Length: 459
Ligand code: UD1
Ligand code: MG
Image (cartoon, rainbow, N blue to C red; front, top):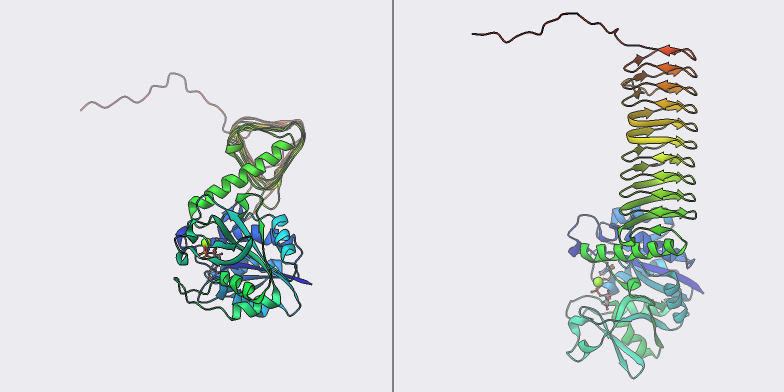
């Protein structure tokens, strides 16, 4: 038996008041639709069909890599009409078609799987939830235990509106029957739409069993229709992620002020202070401490390293590596390709890009190291920079082991500073320097004795 998954993503999302299609708005750094696609993929379906409409080219581009097929629904005449468009893409084998929503992102794979099993290729299975306030939802109308129909809020009688068991928008139907049912839908209702939910009464009339499954957790069935709902789901998901990390021993100063947009792997005894954001793929080694207000993206932080407050680490594609025992920040900036050895110190207002710093190297204040290879125990002084860009090309600076670069120096690349050398403060160095030497490259100091300052001219 084949499993198809249909994801409805054609709706406009008027209440988002955005030019971006609703399903592409991000939750924990990933588009809503991606969350649904990733959960769907865990069921190993034979086919996934995404129904697009509003902003179709953008939505289709976003799912192109997944091997899902897209069908367009133009214009959008209701959820039943949406599924009609998907019918030709469902194949001809008997089996189950599971219908999910692109704007209900946190559906758990286990719940989706249970719904598909409840259908089993022969029953119509509805995912329902009981709400305190069911306003706006399709109500599950039962006769005793057995489901008779779904009645949309706008079409419901006052008595039906008292029902609090509602349809979540997710169902699983026998594929062949689904095709037959959606072909027979009519739009004779309050909204002049083809309601997918009308197939319930059709199944009942044909004697096909209608069963219900319920969501384990209310969060799984919450849809996103507005920025307020998006932010609400974001906090719920962040709290879940925070709880999962704390279960493994990570200490978060405040789980309500923690954001993970990607994956975070942590060793034992990691401490994370408030307002930190982790993006992409981040690894924090054993005993790492991250101070308040840090942003860390695509980076590997070694055991015992400390990231002081307000540090921005962005590994982008190349990644950033911080060696064990290093001290970074406060107010440091590590950019793509920053690769730091053991016990490296990067202090306030220091920027490092595409550079390797060997064990024990230090740049503690107001410095820029770009396209540099820095040896062991180098001390790079306050206000010094590598001038790596000549206006057309980037060049490398090599600073060999045990060099001391004084304050306010400019090292004009390509240049090599020989091992153990010292560069006098204020030097502009454009030629390779010998090992062990003191190099001073600045105007000589002169003093003019008895010099008098100009005085104001009297008129
Ligand atoms: C639908 C259900 C309702 C249920 C509710 C749960 C129907 C008729 N009603 O109502 O019983 O309680 O969801 O949230 O199905 N879409 C399309 N094409 C369309 C219309 C909608 O792709 O022509 C997509 C939307 O993008 C959305 C989903 O279908 O992802 C649901 O559409 P929506 O308009 O939100 O349906 P509701 O009126 O909320
Ligand atoms: Mg809706």
